[in-house]
Image (cartoon, rainbow, N blue to C red):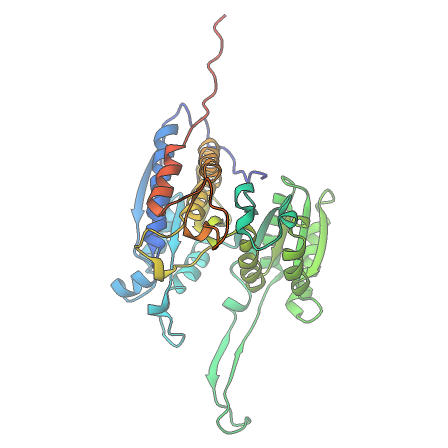
Length: 398
């Protein structure tokens, strides 16, 4: 997989420094997997030689229970003051009333807007040991290495809306509701430009996904993508309608390199792509903007899965997506690429050694020889045990 690199923050092996991180355990399995991720990050920091100073925040459904709101202004400020934000998950059936004035997901919207996080990055690769866990045939997974970039601060989720109500012009007893899908050229330009910049470090292919045959905002999206692409003659630009893209993601996923799209389409397509890896629990993500700190790119890092309250606190959650999100945090926001590589290598080794959480365990009748079924804690410890930092060899003395 091509590395997603931030600018390095100096020689991490010789200069001790402490980084400030905001931790949001959230709801459901969020506290379980975030504790796992923090354990791995702490072990890696100790091995490399830097410190982590944590500020833990009560946000999401937990925030509603404690503070009456999903997130407070002081929580957003604490996240802004940190070098990066590490999130477990938010939400759950307890707070699922769509008519409620306060909902856990409001915390995510506040963080994205308050921190200027306009792009969600979801890398998708397939570990050879997990090919059997994917519903796709093995030959369709060969060579899959794609990056989905979802615009985060515009579109349907942020447009004006009208809740369900009756209308004098409608039949008696009927209800109407509406949502709007606004986008400006500026919002589109910045996320598409990011896609082209990242594609240059990969295979130099960008697929811009829209619904230009129906939506006015998609037609604007396509025009802006063409305009931005003109400044990147070394990167191939393809346009694809979202329904066609959804089909191709399962028919020929290896055809994609960098895929960039608007908020709603990206939400759906990235979850669809997650099944390629065999489980939602495997994949990391980063939400970033344009702001840089002293060490790298400011961002929020979280697994792509939800809060899964039915398995919370039962030592069943797969922590790998959160742990790999921590590796992205190290690389992008802290400039600690060696530490990130060490975590990714440890995860790969654990899979090669046959460790499997429940979501990765073969279905009934599947081969289990050489596999070990483990819970959250044992999987985390296995990864910690395999953290190895490759330090540069000392120069030979003449």
